[in-house]
Image (cartoon, rainbow, N blue to C red; front, top):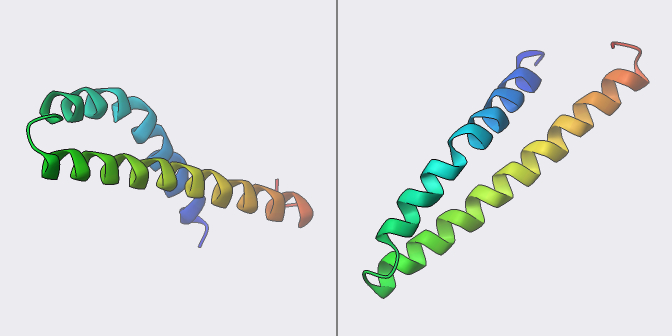
Amino acid sequence: MADLPVIIVLALGGAAAGGPEALVLLLDVAGKSPAVDIVVVLFLICAMTAVLLGTMLLARFIRAAVANDLI
């Protein structure tokens, strides 16, 4: 269970580092067809939701660790 905060931090860091390149790639293929546009929008919604949920989960671990004097 202690590895989960590390995994969350690495995933959020990877998203921050690779996010702009992925967005450029998605915008390059956008506009080709309506189906591709729907997939791009769904991917962006899922990516933003994952970042928000990861941040909330990390904050929860930090608050629990502070409350239990683990930090």
